[in-house]
Length: 348
Figure 1 (cartoon, rainbow, N blue to C red):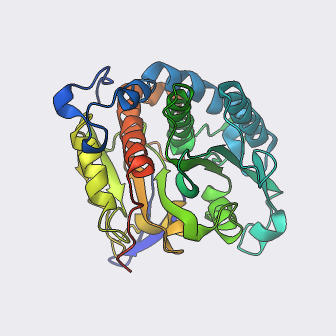
Figure 2 (cartoon, rainbow, N blue to C red; figure 1 turned 90 degrees about the horizontal axis):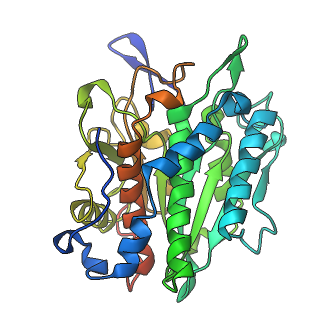
């Protein structure tokens, strides 16, 4: 997540984004109302597991990726791994784009303060909907981090390696459903954006140059840091949810029902306020969708002690909790993708 300097009581405070077992089954009393009795949902849901999240994160957040700074060779190497992952799953890219890559030009970033950044790329994978293909559900995360400083690699395992592999795992679950003949009714765009750490550049570029019209974009479920816990929630099974009722009265209800009927995490709304001093609603990639009137929900684990430090490593991730949070985002996306009507936008 992007850093922010926030003045509080005449001081300047640096804040930012920055445990349990995976559910192996969901009883009949726990099923989502939209998919009650639906074996397709349960089979896809169980595709998401801690072992696969860990396997991918050990690559994405390895020293070999050199901290994944925007446009760096290490970030491009991480991107190649992700593209090959989607190819191996049989998940393609948007036809209109022509590849998995959407170039984010250096000039675009320079005009917004990223003066020393080279060209970079967003990575897009896509599953077309079976009944409403023109309506798009976006699941997003940024795959950049802050690179290497004085020879020390900042691996960004939580920020945002955890969100990156979460999106990859959600894609795997939807693709498994599709292969079983139960693909989503609406299309799903798995959007990995670049340049978040420098200014939300990749998501801004996408929303300025959308592959699919923003008017047809139903929601953005954004994942930025879901692999750790913060000091005030140490050891709890929780996740912060931000922005879910800012634009739509239905999205928060859908997410809460999906949560209640699956892992039943504690949904913490501490930061769910645009006027909160830490301004987290504005500080990750969902905001570029929200400012374009697309409903959003931002999933986040809190401000922990290893944020933007070289100690944000894979060994500190709680993989079982990471799996539960990923399953929640998947369950929410499944319901939105398959409900008869798209969620409404009824707030400003």
